[in-house]
Image (cartoon, rainbow, N blue to C red; front, side, top):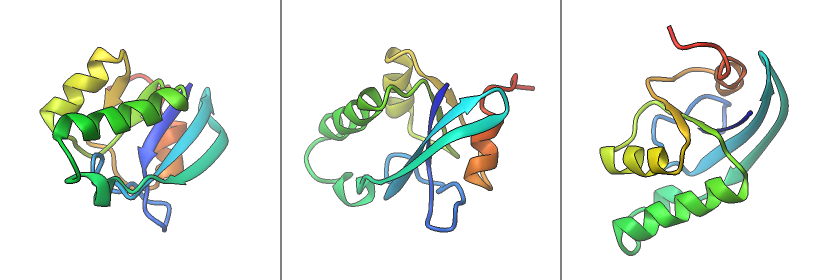
Amino acid sequence: MIVCIPVDRDGQIDPRWGRAARVAIATVQGDAVTGWQEFDVGWDELHDVGTEGGHHARVARFLQEHKVETVLADHMGPDMLQMLGKMGLTVRLGIGGDARRAAASAELPVR
């Protein structure tokens, strides 16, 4: 499974999804993170440049390019949530704390 998570420089989940400065792409097998790459996406600075639809398209392209299947985040707006749902992605909200630990639990059933 390929997971995308907004992260800060300390390895914690950034509470901002659509305004994240940095995200991690994690490859998860079972309960183990087998791959981890971080990207400076600059969505914090780009969020208000252009239209909302343009920003959503920017996020969608990134997720498609990296073959993301699941997004973990603290929260996101309803329009972004709807877009990710239309893309067929699994979205888990209310996630905080250590980003790698959260990624490792991405395949576990939701309780």
